[in-house]
Length: 112
View (cartoon, rainbow, N blue to C red):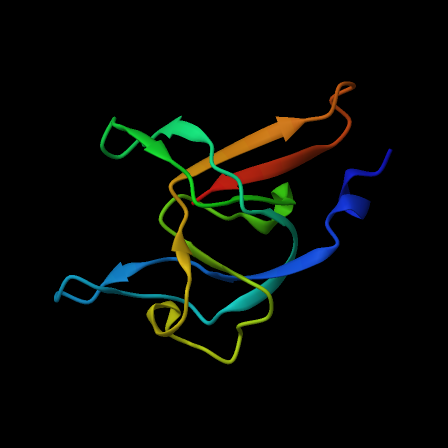
């Protein structure tokens, strides 16, 4: 089965955060990616702090997108916004690559 067929929604990603020196970050230009967005609460360990956190959403994307922890994501096409802080965007706190049972394909699970 082709996992990518399940990615029937879109999300906008802002990558490569750089501190602006005032407690905020600047990002590369936003880009739209295919995704499967679920507003589901999942308990996970935040790798940055080591504490247990409950996610706001679980988002699945193609592994090739190269999304990392610290990047930001929002539901739908939000590419008109160069600043993710202007809208409801979430910091990606956990990234997991998940292969299918035969290990012929994989998908990335993002927790916000």
